[in-house]
Image (cartoon, rainbow, N blue to C red; front, side):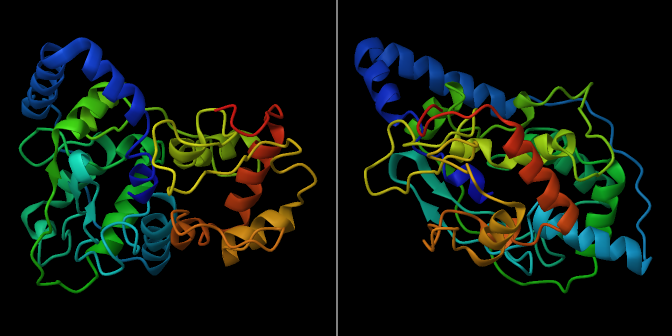
Amino acid sequence: MKPIVKKVLLGFGGVVGAMVVGGAAFVGYAVHAFNASLEKVYDLPVPIMVRSTDPVVLARGQHVAEALAPCANSDCHGTDLGGGKTMDVGPVGKLTAPNISQGGLGATYSDGELLRAIRHGVKKDGTSVRFMPSHEFNWLPEADFVAAISWMRTLPAVQKPNGPLEIGLIGKVLDRFDLLPLVTARRIDHAHIETAPPPSPTAAYGAFLSRACSGCHGETLAGGPIPGAPPEMAVPLNLTPHATGLQGWTLEDFKKTLQTGINKRGKKLDAMMPISAFGKLDELEMQALFAYLASLPPRPFGAR
């Protein structure tokens, strides 16, 4: 989830300006639309899922849960799935990944319901999840999610109450501007979920892995200040092969940066970079992601 947190204040200044110009009517409409989208019920069948106990499948599931669809790490639901840290982002809201272990929400969901929630962003009651970036990783094959759920079910139950998940007025407006995706299900084409090609160390596969980067580094991945973000917020770096970005970088430079959190120039990456997840990508995945970044048109820093 942290990749989503990093764009919490994306476009904040522009939204405030729109609120001044459009006034209360605009804000009222945005809030109404947000609330209505949370109430919408999606008529999606609960898939039949057969849990696996195969050690190979469980190992794959752990990798998916920790690196590819990173729910089981310190930046999301916690390494024990017992819930994440509360992020108080002022008027945007208070955001906490809930306890999804067998001692929390995990016990109330069947395996099939959990699979549907992960792929479609839909809760047990058919309404949308909030603040869960299913649209960034639901390109993975269903077998990977079956593996992840099978592994998650092997973890001990954690008895811990859920932290607050409260969406403020600004958060609701940002969601309607598509600047902060809080209502996940409405952003997914449920009838046509795109899937990636088989894993390979290629740019084609790396393009899917990079979806987790675009929230902070921009659609072009050229980085630069996030529009409207406060000055103390870290500035995402340029990931394109430009002189201000990754020009001259080797695969080994890239791998070392992801694994250590220290870039080629010896600078420690900001804490907002989710090294706890990206650092666990395997050799093939790092090769694929680097191949894709190297294939991008060079763009100057800030050309988001």
